[in-house]
Image (cartoon, rainbow, N blue to C red; front, side, top):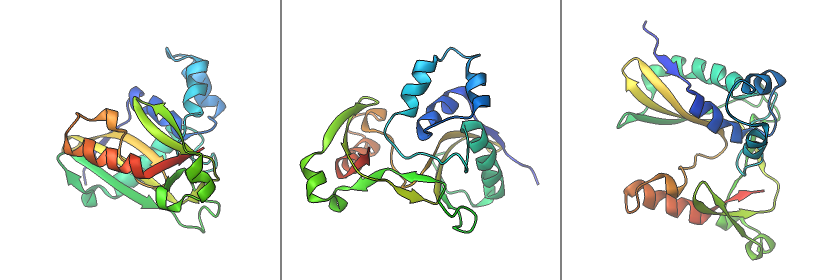
Length: 193
């Protein structure tokens, strides 16, 4: 059987940092050889969003290794639409009793009265996103989004724990269908901070 090449480029590696609260010392030392500053890395770690637990993956490189195995194992079942695949993997409670990370999204119907009164909006990646105070729930779900470069080469676009969420509206051309879906999603869902 031919295995696909899984591409995990430096841009994706840096993007995924926002889904961690802390990073391994080895990863931080490796970043010293890049143009990214420690201030930039720390800022990414504090961005709102779902986060991986360190006992599941200590950094993006460790997460890539786990994800690569999953992608290769499931390569014949990946749901491709226009050379893009979005799928979720649920891990067992017996393997990760505390979950693999946090789900920091909450639907507006789940907000308490107190939370509804104090929604704060933040500019995140060029989009206005609602944030509320609260305690995120643990999750057992890993989201994997891939782009097919060729039949035997897949690029990881992103990896994150918790509820599947579209990219922020600013990522899409205005008036496109993905933009409309993203706008609807982010009007109805908030980050727990």
